Amino acid sequence: MEVIKFKNILNCFNQILEDKKKLFALAIFGATLIILPNFFSYKKKAYISRESFENYEKKIQFEIENIISNIQGAGKAKIFITFVGSSQNVYATENKENKESTAEKYESNTIHKKKSEDCEKKYIITKESDGSEHPLELKKIYPKANGAVVICKGADNLEVRKKITEAISIALGINTNKICVTN
Image 1 (cartoon, rainbow, N blue to C red):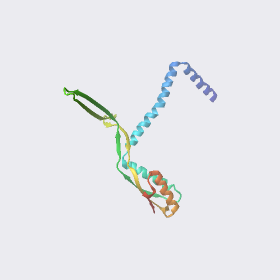
Image 2 (image 1 turned 180 degrees about the horizontal axis):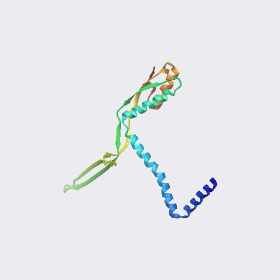
Image 3 (image 1 turned 135 degrees about the vertical axis):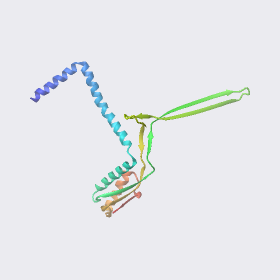
Image 4 (image 1 turned 45 degrees about the vertical axis):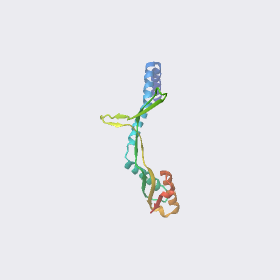
């Protein structure tokens, strides 16, 4: 019975291939399926880039706590991370530059040169479906980690403390002398 279904499907596919209009429509449909997921992933990235610094900080702390808790002998961990600076939003802009240069020659054979430069910078504005307008955010730059304090039961063991310190140093990109591990 499944062989008959497969033959029916194969016959339908052959009929579609014979009709060029249907083949063109099938190609458009396939291209749409390829492009559509990229559109939604862009929207998702835009949403993620708008998360607040507090959410970013909590997310980083949660992920580091999970990493530490998975180190054998560490036990449950709590972490406090210090950051330097503040978050910055980078918006898309349209820049227009006008440069003008003139030279005038006077009777006394002196030349007077005049240059003027104007630079106009406008933010690119997007309009949401609800009618609100916002500048187009290209990216969000979060502050860098500066130090960390970890509290866990396994901190008494020197080998566990060393593993935790190295893991945090790599994960946050900070020197080991800026990490304190205690119980």
